[in-house]
Amino acid sequence: MLIASTDPMIVYYHDGFLRVSLSKYDKNSKDTSVHFTNTHLSKAIFKKAAEEGGFHGMNETELRDYQMWTMDELAEFLIEQGKVDKDWLEEDLKPKFKRAFIHTARMVKPYVLKSPSVFEMFGLDFLLDERLNLWFIECNASP
Image (cartoon, rainbow, N blue to C red; front, side):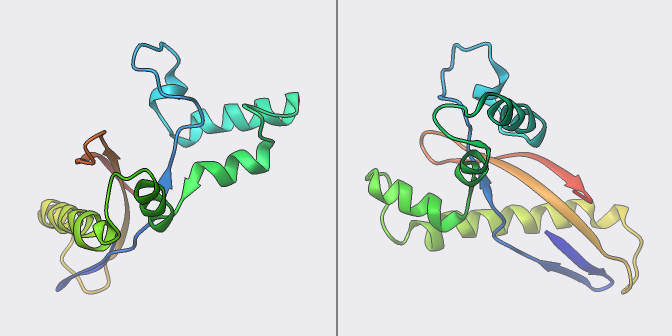
């Protein structure tokens, strides 16, 4: 999310990307890579793939491509799985993201200098649960 101005408040939305886990999910697993998809954990897996010639049958480049999805790729996957209809992305998920971005911008507004020349980039992290509920995890300034 880009706050392009704080006086007046101007906020730009961008779809961004999704990061999927490189390990099969198991709610009982003690392996953190099963539960998290952050960059630090991925680097360790990419390094292991480079050193050992692969990870779960994929080389480092294939792993990087596999982990980063567009929203369209997510929607296509969920449509193929029969979990959503073809309009889900535009009519359900993107509006939820946009509402969350607006809410976040309103939350930070009192804490930023009011000036047309002040701007800030934010990285917002979310999670989709098995029922496709959107959960806000965190917001990072200058990601």
